[in-house]
Length: 158
Image (cartoon, rainbow, N blue to C red; front, side):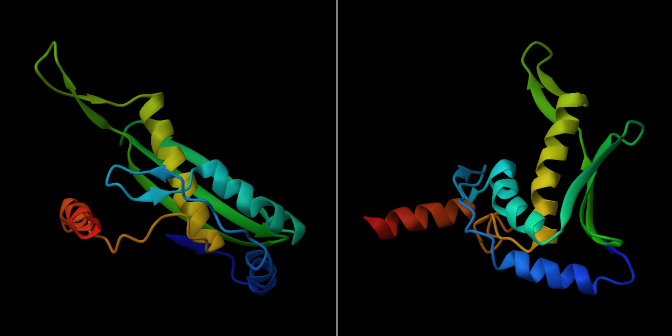
C-alpha cells in the first residue's frame, strides 16, 4: 500500500534525478523457484548514494503484532516535509516438519519476524525507488509453470 503526503512534487523531481544515477543492480541470488534477485544490501548500495546526493532520505519502520503473529515494514522516501512510503504486512509464522513429533509445527519467533522484515525491506525499497532487482518470470511460479519452464529451457538448450 502506497502512502504519501498531499504534495510530492519536489520529492518526485529529486527522485527522477536520483533514478537517472542508479547503477544497474546485480541480481546474483537465486530464489526458491530458480529466478534471480538482488539482496537487500545490493539494492541499498545501488540507491543510497544517488538518493543522498539529491537530498532524499530513506528509512524503514519495522513492526510486529504478537497477537496477530504478523510482521510489517513501512519504507519511506523523504525530502523535507514531503514523503512517500510503501507498507507491507504478512504472517510471520513458518511451518516446519518436526521428525520427533512426526508432524508439522508452527514457529513464530524473532527469527521468523526478521525474515519477513528483511524480505519486505527489500521489496518495498524497490517499490518506492522504482528499481528492478528481481528477474521478471512472468509470474509462472504462481500458475504452477516454474518446473515446466525450467524443463523447457533445458530441452531447448540441448
